[in-house]
Image (tube, helix red, strand yellow):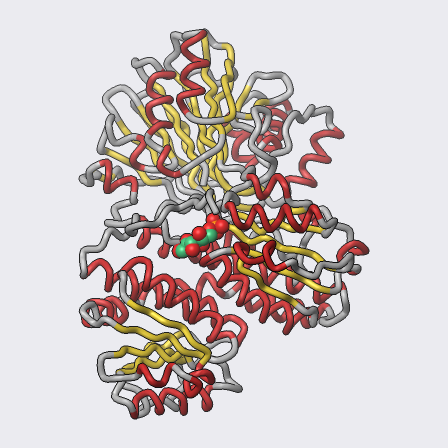
Amino acid sequence: MCGIVGYLGPRSATGVLLDELSRLEYRGYDSAGLAVLDRGRLRVVKTVGKVRALAALVERDPLDVHLGIGHTRWATHGRPSTPNAHPHVSTAGDLAVVHNGIIENHAELRARLTAGGAVFVSETDTEVIAHLLAAKLAGPAAGDVGRALLLAAAELRGAFAVAVVAEAAPDCLYVVRQQSPLVIGLGEGETFIASDIPAVLPYTRSVIVLEDGDVACVRAGSVMLSNLAGESVERPARHIDWDIHAAEKGGYEHFMLKEIEEIPAAVAQTLRGRIDPAGQVVAAELGLSDERLRAVRRLSIVACGTSYYAAMVGKAVIEKLARLPVEVDLASEFRYRSPILSDDQMVIAVSQSGETADTLAALREAKRRGVLTLGVVNVIGSSLSREADANWPTWAGPEICVASTKAYVTQLVALYLLALHLARLNGALDDAGVAEVTTALSTVPALLEQILAEREQIADMGRRYAHWEHFFYLGRGLDAASSLECALKLKEISYKRAEAYAAGELKHGPLALMTPEVLVFGLATQRELVDKTLSNLQEVAARGARVIGVVRAGDNVVTGQVDEVIRVPDADDLLMPFLTVVPAYLFTYYLSAALGREIDQPRNLAKSVTVE
Ligand code: F6R
């Protein structure tokens, strides 16, 4: 997500802040800024673009300052622009905040604060924090910035890590952490703040990792910690002994594993603020009226690679829940096949980067033909998100590994929520039907944590099968759609031959390939189809192939029918695409690591495919 930094001490604060920000560059961002106290007065510098653009602005007007905060932004609420870049300031311009996370109740706070005289200059959710703090400072907190932060935090809903600099507190910075990471680096007579450890490592290896609900008053060389009730808490400083390169990956050897581990949080983030207390989908951010969406009677999804496979799952789910026909096209084929498009259609472009040339071209073709377009994109401010008529973003955060993992899973979340919204609008589901599925979706992060906690069995399988050459993923229904993504991931990272087939297709050709050299993953999680899939697996076992069954926990039907079993948590059939893909990602990762592959940058591949 975004990056937060802070510094207090004898060095040049702008120098340290810019250096800290540049150490967060690997995370990707679209704008950057900093706020410092210059002889007691707040000064803010911010710009769209890279840290070097910010550095150029600072160089033009150097500041001799020793306390400040900084930020790199990854747009969520509001496009990348200078007004939307952090820090955000109060109307009086006497305090500034930087923030990571999402403030769910920003709309109601904004309305209230505006009525109270606050002047908003950005489209961000973050700006409400600056105005809320100012209101508390002028009111009940009576000039005490720490108290104002506690009062403000009590009114914020969502995830946030916030750092505050205020003229009213000229020798300290305040921070609060709620579900968004924040660390404090302790130096000799100086203190560093960052959302990620690598930013502070060149300066100190002594780091306090804040926990949810921690608030800190940070001075040069000292830190006072409390909880949200203002009661003092203690957090031990840890000694960090990773090198910087490893620290960027949070101690992981590869971004791929780090990003797989981030999947539960990415799912939670993509759900956040989109389900109301009654379990209904909140779709205001689409900016499309109910009438406009009710007029949509057909959907077409265009995408490439992994995003295309997310679309395949999305098709099955939208058709099942919303009872609307969905076509899925490879974006590279769409415009060349003269697609039949109509006024009652919506074209959805799914893309992690939002810059994939074929997907953009498909979107433009749909727009040229006058059809409503919707972007399901992870990078706000990307070409696709700017050009689509409406957006329904995924909030996976920056994905560094070339192979997509967490972005794929959040694409599923976005498409499921869209399916539910459309289902409610056209009457295919009633409120109770929608609430049943949203309740199930809310359990996905915890179910995925369970899979990750039990990964050793899969890691062991990955290592044991590292020298096999031929792999198949088979399944029916949603399992068939998931198989496609499982096989793609194995191909691109391990360079092994991996195929995916709907299990019912076996007899129509691929059965000829089944020999004892083949490892088959049989995804058999769909209740109505499990028997049929299992009998297909017996057919491949009879040809000598080795079979690993992927089944729900508690399903003992496979004992004796397959060679090994991976059990995923028992849950609704609809949730299985989430629960089968993560074991497949882990299998790919550990198998490829055992082979010493270039996991984060597989040969011949690029993260953003901006040419046809
Ligand atoms: C595979 C992978 C690619 C991308 C594809 C589309 O792991 O990442 O197949 O999914 O290049 O990219 P986006 O989603 O950025 O449009």
